[in-house]
Structures are given as structure tokens and as C-alpha cells.
Length: 338
Image (cartoon, rainbow, N blue to C red; front, side, top):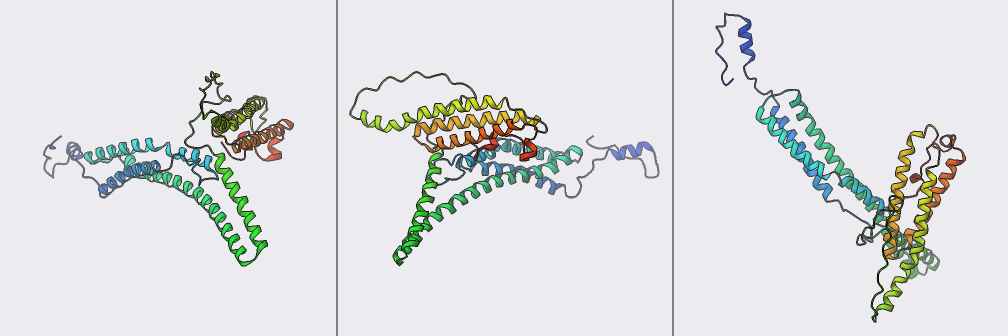
């Protein structure tokens, strides 16, 4: 109704007069404009969170600085970055809903829900982006502290040597070399970002054997190239051996009885183990192409821990939870997730 009908005189009290009075448009309550601003602000916070997540590095592996927790940080940051698209869509939907509510200028159950939910959702998305940056800063701080400690030990060794404190200089130099070697080994064991990603692991899906490439035409650089490729060819048998161990280990874990209260976790644990073995196989293929041996040592150690965990679960299936306080887990037995 563009204009409600005129009401009877004030002295005429009737149900029809009350009905006409109820048809009069109600003005928006006090604070309605502020609620609209908060709702629009929540939608904008979703855009800000998406931009902040987009600024997170996509990969820190092989950059030479992130030696500790490099592979784990890359996977964790991808968990945060995957929500950029939903945040952008949510911001657009929130702005559209805010505009519709502002044009109608009426409150109702759905309208109140929109005005309350949008600021809360916007704040939650911003906290999610902040959490991703805090994780990145924390891991970067740990690596910075380790590299700073290495430089500090080297400087202490030089100063001690200049002062004539040979014993202190030797101890500081040995500590410097040990720490630097460990950091360099950890940095080399992470797959480099320039290495192309290999296919799916044999633990997930068997690969079709590729035909052997034709022998290259003889050239003056052939001998040098063959000498450079010799370490990579030497890693191929080790990779095949480790992949065979992965296949056998996964098959044996399928025979492990998950007794109560761990029975419901059987499917989840087997699926997680399959995914981790697939990631391990892909990392081994990248390490073979780059000629790195640190990844092979890590894979062998993790497989040994997974085997020991399986043997403990087979030794006492019903008492495993009481003895160790947890359910048998192949991925949990690995020192670091792949």
C-alpha cells in the first residue's frame, strides 16, 4: 500500500481501525544504520582476509633459509590459502545481502540473522588469516634464530682465536660446523620449488612404466653429463627399494587389528598412511632428479618407525591403548609428516 487509508475519528474504536493502524510502515529502529555498517565491515573483512592469505608464500622449500619444518610449513600454509576463494565469494554475498537489507529497511528474523552473522564471520576469517601469518612468522623465526646462532658461534670462534683461547675457539668452530652442516642437510632434504612435481605414488596408484629414452648423440659434453648424472642413477635402485617397502608396509598395516576403543579409527588411519606414503614417494622422485640423499635417509628412518609401530600393535592389539595411551598410527610414528 503506497498510502494507508484514512483512519476513522479518534472517538470511533473498532477492530478495523486497529487493523489499519497495523498497516502503517514502521520506521527502522535506532541503531539500524550502525548494524548495516557493521555488516558491510564484516564483508570487507572477508576480502581483507583473502588478500592476506594470497600474500602468504606458496612454497618455502628449497629457498636456502627455511631449513627446519620447510616441507611441513608449505603443506600447512596451503591449508590456509585454500580458503581464499570462499572468502571472496562470501564477501560478495555479504555485501549483496547488506545492500538488500538496507534497501528494504525492515527488520525480521532473517534480517537480524544477516546483520549479526556477517560481522562475526568477517572477524573469524580475519583471525584465520592472522593465524596463517603467525605460523609462517613462527617457523621463519625458528630458522632465523638457528642461522643467527650459527653466525654467532662462528664469530665467537674467531674472537676466541684472536684472544689466544684456542680450546674455546676449537669448541666454537666444531659447534659452528656441526650446526651449519645440519641446517644445510635439512635444507637440501626439502624438495626444491624448481623441480617438476612427479606423478602419483605407487602406494596410491601404480604408474605405467615409461619407455627408456633414446641414447643421446655423442658430443664433447656427453662424458661430463654422464659423470654428473651418475649420482642420480645410483639413487634409482634405492628409490625402487623404498617404494617396494612402502607397498609391503601398507599391505601389512591392512592386517593390523584395531581393537576397541580404536576400532573406529581403522579406516582413517589407513587412509592417512596411504596419503603419507604417496607424499614420500613423490619426494623420493624429486630427490632422485636433484641428486639429494637426505630425503632417502629420512624415508628409510620413517619406514623403520612405522614398522616398529605395526609390530607393537600386532604384539598386543587389545592392550595397545592401555600400554601407550593412544591408538596405533602409521603416520603418527613418523618423526615429521611428509
